[in-house]
Image (cartoon, rainbow, N blue to C red):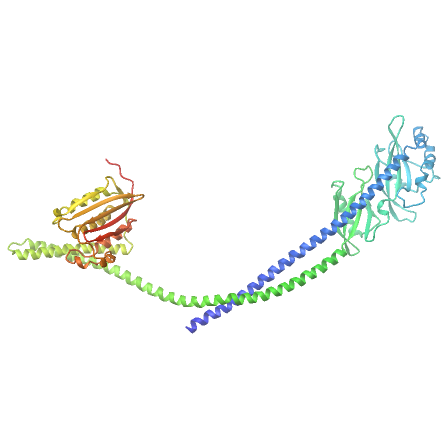
Length: 583
């Protein structure tokens, strides 16, 4: 027993180790997943909050820019209605156009505050075909190179106010961008557009900016001021091309590096639907503060995750130790049960072998006995026919013949029981006319000795059919009827009744007589059992057992309903079948 218990303990120790390792892996996996999800959630929330804050800041700045643009637009509408400008254009006195405009636009060009929102950096006029009208050299109209003036040319003079941006170089040679507003000049006589006044202003992006805010204007494939390196400019150019296909109010963004620092770049279309070249405002938002905050949060998450992991591993060790206790007990019990099961299986195998041997012996013995008993009976019958036998000799020979008949019946029953025990008896189920079968067996009962002294009562509905095999159904009924006749009393009666209950037929066979003793009733279906009170009645104790086994093969049951002095009744149940049509 110690060896049997030692192996389960070793198995339980291995189970405990595997359980601990498995739980640790689960804890580590869950912790890693939780940390990853938490880190990604924090990163997403932080980036979204930062982007939302900066987008709100951009929206506020754009509202200010729209207010400034509205003021500039109203100022330009006022300027194009100046009478001297109208007179020079309508009279085609172009030599007087710029001198007249100099006086009319002096308050715009000569503003003391060079960063004021209404200060113009230059002005030009476009003729009716959209070409720039060259100003006289001595006029103060703002310096523009010929190339820059050429960029102001439009395919046609605009009928509505247009906004554009002009990339130019200042007096020091540095690139800069001016916002351009082209206001149409409408003739007071024909009400047609005869020219356009083009004014240049410093763009809103050139106004003083907040700390940490960087803004520039992208036009004609270049950005002013240049805030990014060539690689970043290439990425921006690709994003600008993509943004041209988006709605005018959409804000497009991408991540780029500026001097090794990650930034979020936001692109906003400045002049949607304009006849001038498309321009975008580029706003750069540094991600360095956000990255620092994210790094701090990551360390905090990793620290908390490490502590959680240690707690989980410690809890895994404790839980594994506790879970292994019932497993150890179960393993020990299983080892004992396994040993008992092996013994039971061995005993069962031996019992099965003995049972098969007994079944084979019974079958073989029955087969071997049939021939000599048949020969013996034939010899006795032949001897009985010899002349000169005395009456006593004849009685003795007839008694021997009756014993051979009894022995033949017993051998036949044993053969049938052996086949059932071996599971080799198969029934060919069909519809059997129970009414006709009972009537036929009752007629056979009338030819038995002393049958005239027994009254047979029948209450079986006509045309009642059951599911079964006629041969074996007859054996069941014959055994029940013969028992009712053998254990009856002189002048007694036998009652045969049948009734239908749903899908079953209940057949009862009752007889008068002394009844079966109370102590013998539990054993009446045992083989070779006969009640002591009936030892003088012929029989070998196999009829009831054979009848019950055959009834069960038919899907029914045979039972003793009651037995008392004066009356004994058995009941057999069968499966109901569809009645055959009467011919």
